Image 1 (cartoon, helix red, strand yellow):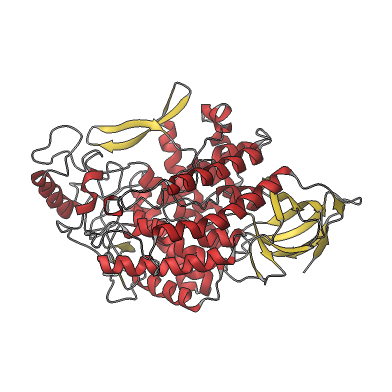
Image 2 (cartoon, helix red, strand yellow):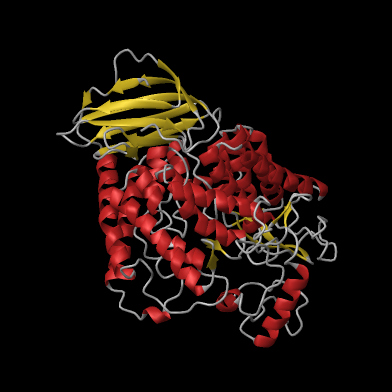
Length: 596
């Protein structure tokens, strides 16, 4: 392995001190969060019963990023707590009835995706844990047609058998209890159908038993049999399995399923249909309509439920093949919507829903989707698409306080930083995330309510661990697409001395620039006492290869050939080094294998 030794002695940059402070604060906060909200066995201090199919995803989401935090440089203590708490959530929601055989008994892949990212991160944290690998393969079999107790997959038609799937197989008929805990929430969304008896106007009151009964009848008749785009999020589970095994069957399944949906898009004139009937026909149970399916163009979220799974699956396919043409699948949907959009008050609005009346519900499009494509492809056309956003020159540089559910609200100012347009971004994002940790810990200290009255989202809104700034600044990539995406970044780090993943103690990292040929990164050792050694990996899964490295702080400024996916950097006390690292991207098959 090529080794480079830092030589420049300098006071640590402010961003490096801020990065280390943020890591230290989260290491201290996470145990306090666990002690406040869980019993000694790790289960939530909460109610004794929780009916319906909803909820376990929210339990897992309460700690979803803890193993990722460890993989970035958080403490071993947080890592072990994350595993203990995953088991505790699984036990508790098995007792409630949502989980069976350690996986949701049945639910849709927006919610499976939310709960599964916690599990995926264990592969990045420590791929040698046998039970994680065994669970991964068992869960994958449920979706590849290899588990008779979970016949979710129709191999002949290359489709899922229902939008509601899980360890008990496809849920072809919903019961009264299934949606019980979700009724108050769904009562605030547009109605799932336009012909619900007793409903006038765009909103259906799910809390009204008569209305609810009619909604269930129509859901079961029209939406519970067949496939929907949302199911493409399952490709992350199978890609996750591939990263453990390298089994060609996993890779082939992901590509076959995505290409089946590409065929359906082509057959529908370039627009993604949101429902496929049990025989594989578009609109089979919807009177021929390509819209109106479960979590589709009409209900409940519209465009988000189409573009997210398409993007997640396409990025998984690129990871598995290196073929950027898979990104054309989500690109096509983005461009169709943008072409139909309009600019109002300096914002690009697109139609986010399709009903019997046509395209409607014009709203601002989240830049996250085209930005994710650009971050992966570095294609000029993807960069040009971003110029179609008028707010690109105004609000994209703003670092807003707080964090979203997915810790993913700062992708626009990060993009501007990489383009040289937002030079103060590292300080701003680190301060914003430190402030959010402080705000959440203050809320926890003042949280004296009755757990019996808490909503199932209560804990995830207080979880003090945030990873967005570490992923962006240290790894040179965006936060994951929250509802089930995998991590797509340029760099990962491993502590040579401790033989574990993540930045070594005292070390900060800042990626200044990314392009199609490599990255520019600064590494700083904030300690005046200890030498630190780190291995840098090309990609989250070693999917890239370093071609060469140039020490920009040295005198010769001559590149050193690498031609490997790992590179070691030695940082004596008080040293800082600037590196330009060239790379060939997506030339290695993804693997969880670690160099230490």
